[in-house]
Length: 192
Ligand code: AP5
Ligand code: MG
Image (tube, rainbow, N blue to C red; front, top):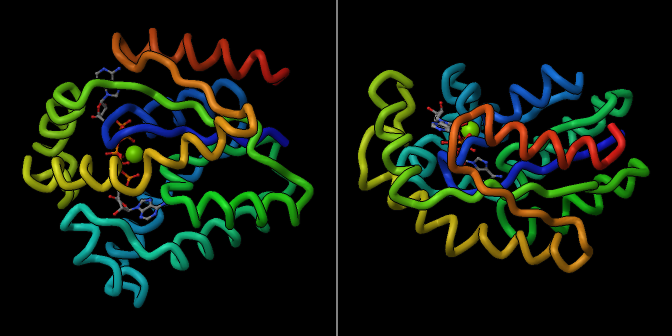
């Protein structure tokens, strides 16, 4: 099973590229942000507990997302591969993820960092926010907060995977198809 982490600033294209990868390679896709938003929509206890911080552009607690991913990995052992979109997002999440995967005889095969300039992602998210209904897309202030959280807590995760030679950055500018061609070339290189 091939495990790919899609990484990068909010709005860099993780969800868009994950959907294309899923269609081309027949691998699974999980977005912790989507799972959390689904809890909020359903009004679950978890959703109610994290809603305010997500809407301010802050992260959910590590233990919440780690347990989500542990359940996901356990229930997808038979998958051809999985794309993890937006996870891990902190150093403790990365350490826990490595442990969870190792317990299942797995590892992160490649983290792909989709690099996009901040002004471009702010533009993309504001555009999407007009119709996405995502509370964290609605104002530039919250988008800037998400970017600040990325720099303070998430960027460091790249070093974790770079240290073991499993990190690659690609240029996330250009059309969706151009970015997908860059990512597909990397995935093809993994032998998928
Ligand atoms: P999450 O849902 O992961 O949001 P995010 O990382 O902020 O990123 P987005 O989903 O906004 O963007 P994306 O990179 O998927 O880009 P997309 O393809 O949509 O997380 C939301 C929140 O949940 C977090 O802030 C946190 O609170 C919580 N959370 C999630 N994971 C967590 C974790 N592990 N730990 C703790 N808390 C967690 O593209 C964006 C837009 O641009 C779209 O409209 C798209 O159509 C467009 N677009 C894409 N590519 C291109 C292109 N090449 N050219 C032009 N437009 C493009
Ligand atoms: Mg997304």
